[in-house]
Image 1 (cartoon, one colour):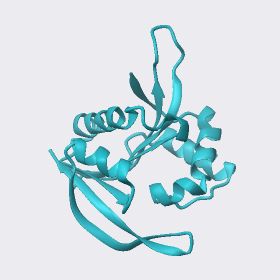
Image 2: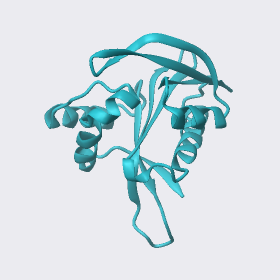
Image 3: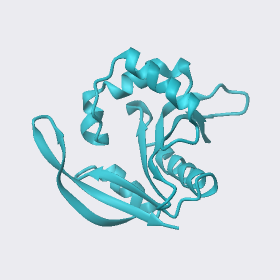
Image 4: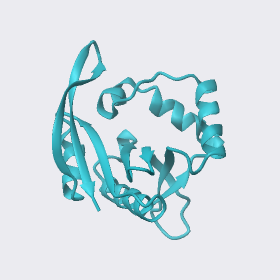
Length: 169
């Protein structure tokens, strides 16, 4: 079972590891690196503005009754627009937690949050071309490919195309 919880100050090292991992920058369209100080300020801003334009969650797996939750990644709802009823979703699972089916559970929880809390009409995701695991995940959850954005993301000295997936509720 998977659950989402708000980011806490104690999650600083998790954020630091994820946001400063160059291997994830290309997969997740990240823009790091970030200092611990910058991330500490970021976490504080999340705590003060829960209804802002971004919601970030720590993803935890509950393996068995009575077990302590295990952190398996991060999930985001970003670029939220109440006027247009849309937001972007993103999921980053820790490398050793991939391929276990958590992504689909996380995306279902993000959809539920977006529908029930934010009254979202449309969710979208940007996926780097060639990220087959993410493409498969979004297609399986009913997102459809609507465009390829050429040379949308710069990483590793090159520009990369990004596929845009969306789901209308």
